[in-house]
Length: 334
Ligand code: CP
Ligand code: NVA
Image 1 (cartoon, rainbow, N blue to C red):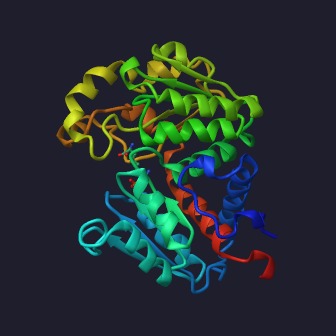
Image 2: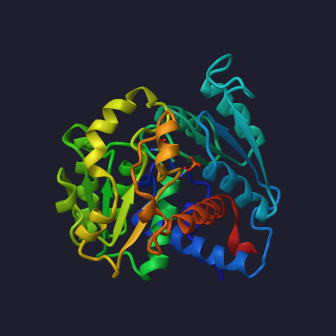
């Protein structure tokens, strides 16, 4: 029997705040069940003849392939569409594209720049739309992160996540929301210049208040990570921000996740995991030759036994499947 919340049927997710705390937890639970189902060798038909459009303005390894495999595993199909394949925003407005694709597909997953594009797709397509990363948010990533934390500790509530790095990017914004929705204390270790939007912090603090979770913005990483159960980082230069590489490297050098920072948690060898949404720069040569490379984590930490980054990457697929199944499949009828 799969965990199923009928309230999620037909729903979009453009940011984590679009689902209730309970709905978010049920999506994570469903993803855990779907993972076990796949491991047991079941390729079912929960998404039989459901067709998903994947509109991608930015490149992707995990999100794109998770979004394809998730629907194919359960009997449906996906169509990968870049800006070169369709007229989106060039010859045809996003609104018109939404109205056309909504007549053909059962759902749309979007990755790109502006949050308003994904919002327009949701408003006019008439089908569920999921945000697969915009400049502002990356909600499907955080479902996988929370699932990985749940698998690692057997619980979420009361844990402490320390995010270290660019404190105002899509991943840190969504991680902050996801943590407080799950009752996890969130510490954002970032330089003043990269502090998160105060409006978003206020919203997240209100969510945290109902779940007993706090938010701290700390500029000294060694202080911020004390007591952390999860050390989390992301690239210092997000897609579309390559011109800011030099400035970011200067600002973020003291925020590298390395063995010293791991020791500063006080939890090394105990209840501590390392997460990174990936792709990651963890070896010097790749970091120095890439346009956006900056060595946000050392190889030693990335490859350590407490690094769960590849479980986290796999969980992208199970959580996206949970979103599809909840929104498109009438599980009660199966
Ligand atoms: N974490 C993540 O979104 O990876 P991709 O950019 O490869 O999709
Ligand atoms: N913050 C990163 C996340 C990549 C998955 C970016 O936007 O490039």
